[in-house]
Picture 1 (tube, one colour):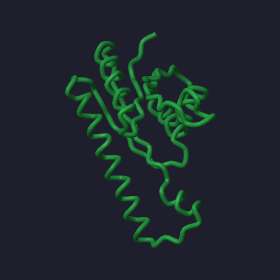
Picture 2 (cartoon, helix red, strand yellow):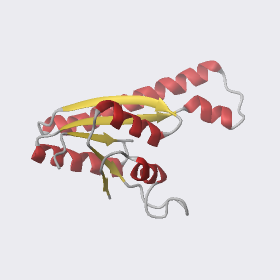
Picture 3 (tube, helix red, strand yellow):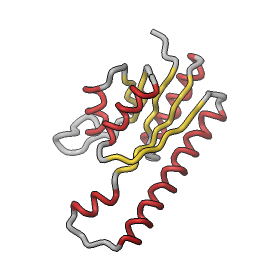
Picture 4 (cartoon, rainbow, N blue to C red):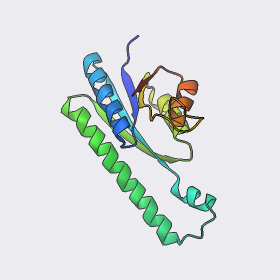
Length: 148
């Protein structure tokens, strides 16, 4: 099976940094291209869910900070791919569910492999893998390579 287009979700953590590095090495060896994806969780909804009264300007500032953070995360990951000479594109989105954004991107972009990090233990639900990774593994329409 040839993997021509890899989707690499990243959140800027050390674990996802390892996944980016592994994906770049794999893409370079296969002659594949990479799309890096950063999904911002919906800040406004999480604040409303906490029952907080928040000034609109505060929400705007938080949303802008999240967008700026997303740009930085994607730029850092993009630099790794470009340095290795791997064709790379980036995508950023805001969503309530990270896993659903990953699955939507796979379908929309025609990716044939997802390379993503495992974030270790997270209570009983995420005993071995992070909960977003578990959801992607169960629902993905293509193979998933999990990097530890």
